[in-house]
Image 1 (cartoon, helix red, strand yellow):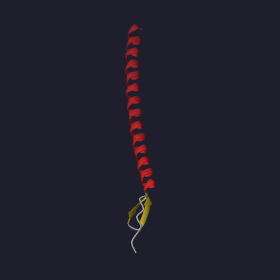
Image 2 (cartoon, helix red, strand yellow; image 1 turned 60 degrees about the vertical axis):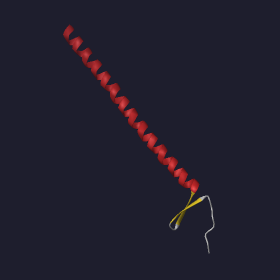
Image 3 (spheres, rainbow, N blue to C red; image 1 turned 120 degrees about the horizontal axis):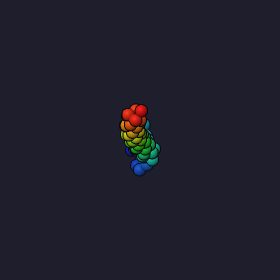
Image 4 (cartoon, rainbow, N blue to C red; image 1 turned 90 degrees about the horizontal axis):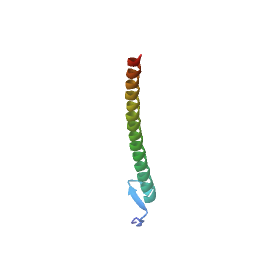
Length: 68
């Protein structure tokens, strides 16, 4: 008995996974990776912004302290 040719399945040992399920999982992994990279970019941007605010506040504090 020969297995039927079905272009929607990928044979992986005893488990048969439908091609669209495999592609959906790949898209989910890609989306998770993109979300992870976006979170990293946002964290770095926030860190830079807070660093600028901190530097501005320090300069302002020195300026106010010297005027007293």
